[in-house]
Length: 218
Ligand SMILES: [Zn+2]
Image (cartoon, rainbow, N blue to C red):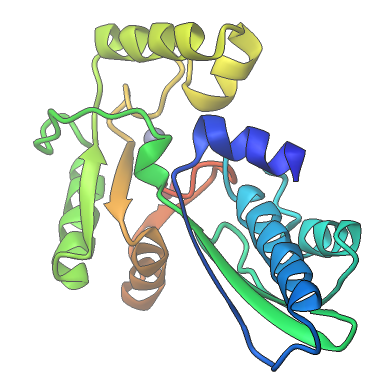
C-alpha cells in the first residue's frame, strides 16, 4: 500500500471505484476484501504509469496477497490506462477498478497545430482523430529544441534528479518530437491504439511507460 500510494500521490491522477460482489459474512471481512481489491487494482494500474514495469498481473497478485486475499482475475492489458481486478478473501469476492489519466503526467504543449510534422505522420494523425469522433485529441506534436529544453528543465526541477527526468522527457536534441516524428495524444489512448490497428495506420507506441506517445513507424 505504501509503495503504491507513494507513486500515485506524486504522479497519477486516480479515479478509483470498488464494489463488493457477494454478500459478506461479516462487514470486517467485506471491508478487508475491498481493501485488498483496491490495493491490487492500484498496484496493477501503476504498472502502466511512471516507473511501472508492465507486470500488471504479478503486482496485482502481490498486493492482494499482502492484504490477505488471493487474486482471481486481472483484466489488465499491457499499457492499459484502466484495469479491473477481482480478489477473494475468506470466501468474500471483491472487485475494484483503477484508472489513471495520462494527461496528468505527460508534458503539456498546447501549441499543437500540426505544422512541422512529417507529412505521413500528420495524415495518419488526422485520420486517427477523425475516426475517434472526439474521443482522442492531440496534446503535443512537433517541438522546437528550445521547447524541448524547457520541458527537460521542468522535469529536472520536478523530479530533482537527471536520471529520473530522463525517464519522462527526452533530452534536447534526442526527442522524436523535435524531428516531427512523434505526437502525444490525449483522451482515450486505448481507443487510439485500436483505431491504429483497424485502419492500418503507420503509427506505433515504442515507449512502455508513455502509452500516449505515438511515433511514425519507419
Ligand atoms: Zn511524446
